[in-house]
Image (cartoon, rainbow, N blue to C red; front, side):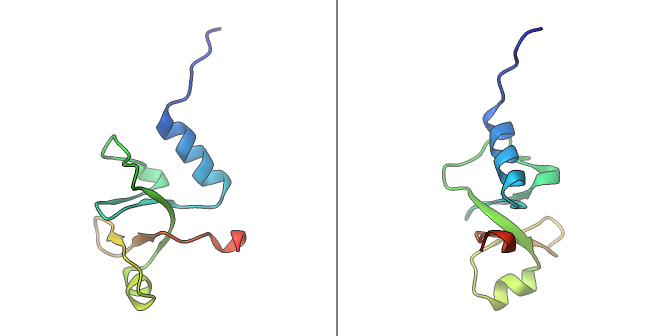
Length: 83
């Protein structure tokens, strides 16, 4: 059997899952693990983040990017378990 080397996206997604993150965010976009990197490219500015409501992100003063339906956001914060 041939070894298939993992892609950068697969490596990043595995890290995010293993450490309790929900997705990535940057000033340009946000994505969550079940629809990971739909842009097919990750910027070096992407940060690991957690999914929250847009309301909570605003209330806490985070810069965030809203999801497609505008009811969720990914913010660059450690998962609760990691604190």
